[in-house]
Length: 188
Image (cartoon, rainbow, N blue to C red; front, side, top):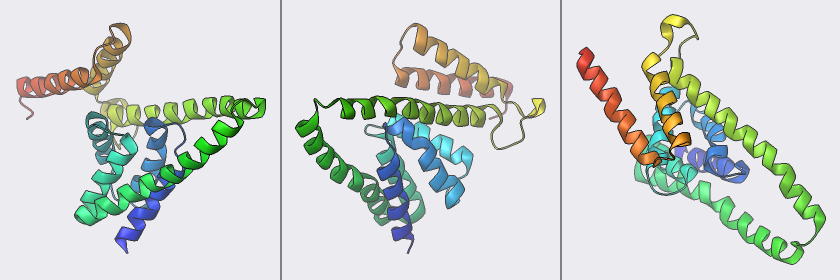
């Protein structure tokens, strides 16, 4: 039964995550955190971090990790297959339609109208993750704010935008900085 739930949950993610991995984050969060309670918001944030650092699409990596955590290797297979199955069918159909009708203005208009919705999905996921970094799952009060997380976020954002550093290097440096500060403060 859990395999079917994993398959169907990630089938939804695979079917309705238009715009790539970052656009899929709110859907994955809805399924695994809110819908089934398989992960807490903190675990979800860790999942997204790991899914970004490993090779491959974020949604597929997330499906594999959630499947492993919930039901082992068979769960990973069910979740991953659920995530990629719609894409295989939809991309095949869309490729056929696109090559047949690619010069139609109606098709170009539809594609242009999807862009703002994808940006909104990505921004929503980003704000959700930022809130998770800033206060975790607690109320947004000054005493609950993770100032170190906010400083690391700001520094990472700055070097990524200003100097276009490699994102993996930035994540590694943030992890080292966080560990170093906690060792210095003696909270490790």
